[in-house]
Length: 499
Image 1 (cartoon, rainbow, N blue to C red):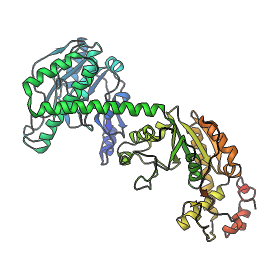
Image 2: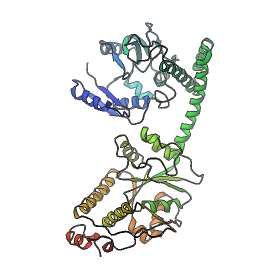
Image 3: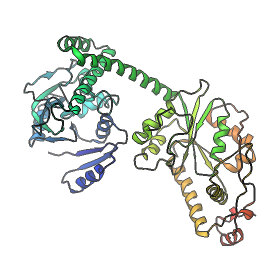
Image 4: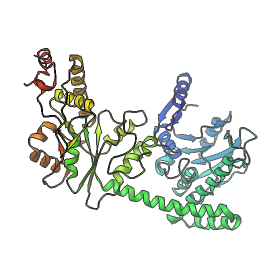
């Protein structure tokens, strides 16, 4: 029987990915390793689902073992054509573990007819299978549900959506997996897991009741009469919390979709702070600083939702979406931030670049300096003084002249050219405008008018209280200027040495 195995690395910080890749190299069948930086079981399931190619899609958990005849049984069940999706038995791998968590040892064989209610727990994510046609109709897992959220019920939610979409399902006890969850009877982890099941049920019922499915309300009321107690209270509270969270999520999505989003793409010492202050003087624009700067220990940038910076390391895409979704002053219609070529390059954050490229409504202001020598000198002087900007009213810094090595200059010039070329190619399908620092300083009025028109705003005078830090000539600030000028003569970079 042909098939493939898809392993999803859900933002692990240990050796998980290394183990996955090692397994892939040794496997005698096709194995795909997928990275999903957004933490949460639904995100992980969605990543695996989107990467899959087969007609029958099996989901299990990372602490489960399939029965030796599992795949043969799956093949027989789905060859019959009777069912479009199935769940199966989940037995303990370690008999000393608690039977009350993540297990289903029932030998009954209920059939779930199309458009009927499916009780919570009937199909569990450690052992569930769907035909491709089901996933095409139903779509992705609800990322507001599942492990990693307060509501672990993404599995039964998906099965219920399949039923309501007109598909026929069943619980097949011959489909067996062994769960090695490690939670012992009476342990705190066991008690907390059972409480989380209550919250998951509450969210599950509340979601479908909100969507007008009366059978869910009837079943929930019936269960409440039988159960009562703290468990039912937790279900009700969780249901209410889920509804509020869903409303908030939709509001954020609406804010995200309605916002005019942009980035200032640049490198250090190209005038990005100057441009940021210019744009922020416009009442309808708000520009944050470098929200993906790897050296920022904490978020001191505005605008940014308070206490949300921690999310960057957990889920950089949600972090980015939350940034663009936030509510600023009622007049603000355009929101952006400064993004340098070297930002978001860590393995967990690289996905940010692809996400930005796929934001077809994103506008990119590509800020550059024509003279890379002046760019390099500015960087050296800032590093020397640890003073990265000068505000109105502050004294001019008396910089010490610096020596620049020839190889250092070549490396910097080549790197800047490569950065610009790669960025232009990467964002070639996006709406982008080139802005040069030299033009912005020489004719601020014309350049800002061009920028505002690009952003879809009416021209107006913009102001900045950022002043140029060094006003002395290149030849006065580079001790070996003449030497470098001679070495770069007749090269494509000789234009930088204009004095």
